[in-house]
Length: 162
Length: 248
Image (cartoon, rainbow over all chains, first blue to last red):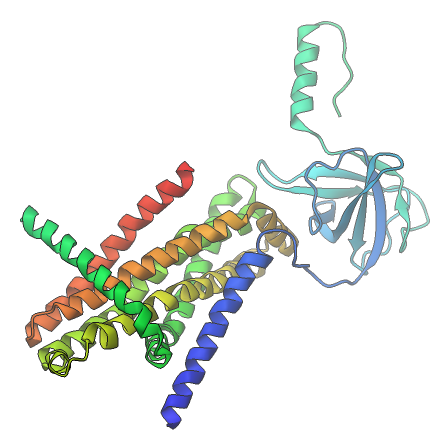
């Protein structure tokens, strides 16, 4: 009788584990249910005209070193811009408040990340402050379009694609 | 040669029909099925977890090496997740299942045949298909998708272990890119594949045991055939299922 009980217990555990794994695969993997990383550090917001495919969880880096993460992405229907909340790790607390934020691409196929370029101010970013100078994501299609537009009207100097 | 092969395929088909007809009555006695889920599933768990971990770690290593050349290490999560969910998880689990649980089923039923236990049951008007074969078949079919799910989850964490902890891919990029690229259809493809492999491997195992020659040599040959046929059938089915899923 005892072996029968341990057998049933083992089967129950196995089935439970299997269904837990199935549950994880079907609910956590597609979509963005899981939050990553701890919630330490201070929050800074930045407004962009276009964020490309930047997502929550994307890295925030300065001079190529990761200093934080994108906490959330929202849309401001007042001025039609994207509001990106960045969470900067607490040890990086000496970032000038006139620094600029730009959205850049990692490698050829990589995801987007937020790059911070240092400003020259003596006051630093703190929790809740906003980065004023921002540069949108470069959309490859519009870049190509611009290039061909310039190419077609050759000689005339077009706007520099940003 | 060709007629013999065709006859064999036909015999397996008829056998499948007879087993399926006995599955309903077998489910009325769940204790036997639970016992077989334990034998086929719970006892294979350790080897499945160990292999899942190593397959995931290798994926992390190879994927990182390849993606690094294009400067896209962040896509490692996507590569590992899709590779595991759609191909490696179901296929490797099925191959391990054929070796671990399939052989045990074949030799068990084959020995029952060799020692005339199955004949004795028939003499007492107890249908061995209902009481011996059907619960084992059901146990394998139920255990396989669960084993695949466990394999996939362990494999993902193995890939994460190598990719993020050792190679230094960013955790946020690893998971967020994976979550945005993997769709429910990809998960479902893996589940459908694992169900098909479960049916195929369990059927081959019980069929080979049931029709084994009642000698020591016959049981040994049947066990070998189980592994060979299950493995080939798994890879064949995998190609056809993949083609069907991609062709939708």
